[in-house]
Length: 109
Image (cartoon, rainbow, N blue to C red):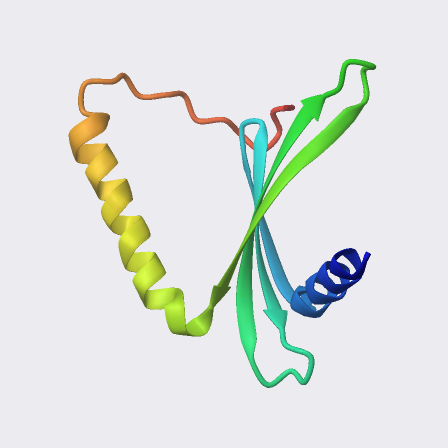
């Protein structure tokens, strides 16, 4: 029981105050880039959430969510690593594949 109470309190503490949000729809997934402020608003951090809609057996829709907390001291290294991996994939893995059509935001899941 203690662990559940502790984890819930810790998650709530990590939530932070919402400052700015940018949703990006990509097929069946939506990515949320959320800027949050710490409790005293003396620091800021980024949460990246992947949300994927799925249908349960009973016909209801639910969402699988995965979240990353990214702190300011890691921004540059994270961005460099992400760009390096994206460039690698584009040059070495996708060169022989046909282009995928771009989905518009109006298209449904």
